[in-house]
Length: 366
Image (cartoon, rainbow, N blue to C red):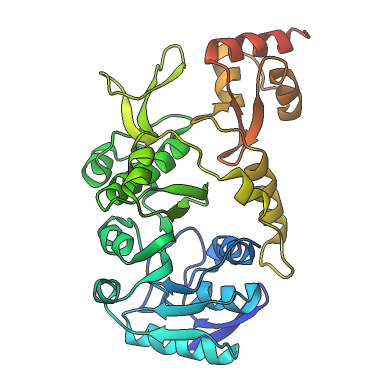
């Protein structure tokens, strides 16, 4: 296998010359590297640089080149023992080379079957970044997580979660998805809800620190306290959502009713205090994008859906309002914010009928 040297953030990496160039990607060869996921890894670096983040023993479970863990250790400099694992011997060799290239202490290259590794060792942080769904690895990962540990998950099977392949979502996540303007948020909440239900089986709760959608993947950072009480409190945050395609109204409920989708996670997808403590650090691969998303996450209001500017203008039969003007007008009737899920979307705590009425008023100059 031929390798080339690239720089991602402040970290030199050896990666395969033939590699994926866009999107979440498909696996090409036995060692996988996708430079388009640099933003995802930037967020991991910021996560470990958080002043309140203290992780003793971490595992990058499916590390490929080891890019994520190597960048974390080189750029965030946490006091962490980081185990970097991949079951492919060629990937293991690349991981070892990248650890040596960056002269990192505290990194341990592993070449083990993931389920066997999780069955015999415990970690404070486990990162699952599979090709597609994380479902097959959740139970062993949850059981291998220490008390109050953090489980980080990337899911690239957004088509089922967002409702394009509804039957697959039902089979895989035991949830009915929503194919609508806020489908990716609904999909993210299905994913969190599914993890929460699996964690509850082992008397573990779920506390989202940061969960987001970007570039056709979903990413979760979940703290998992280990008590039956925390599991019970977590399950109370699950529920259902009805979306009326004629009136465009959204309605949440704790109990299922005919026509409802879910179950969804109806709690917050961010911990406001934690997100406020996330900071840009020097030398990130995509600093401007990181700043943009930090601003969005830190100001996004806690509502389990959003509205689309284009949805409203199309339904009313008028041209879309400028987003800043729209936000100013909607602030007069309730809480409002931009959303990271869509550059033309916004969150409001008001029902669609009131949002629509205010939209018409703004078009009339009121």
